[in-house]
Image (spheres, rainbow, N blue to C red):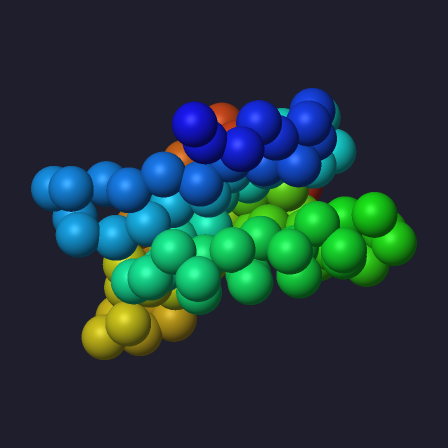
Length: 106
């Protein structure tokens, strides 16, 4: 019979369609996911992540640390790499400044 894990210890399973192992563990009220090719690799990553979580040195994910403003500026810069500044100002600025980020662009 498989070993029973205690609450907060995480869980490891195999995803056959991806031919990878995954692990999930709770951190900060959310579930975090780790993946790797072997069970041993995932268990080592899980052990490291749990140690970081317990010592409060776990880095925040991009989703947790970015604001809407940060994401929008990232999206505009990624969407418009070949555009000149005037084009970005003309095309993206009106809807960003009036609808989403009033007072941030001008």
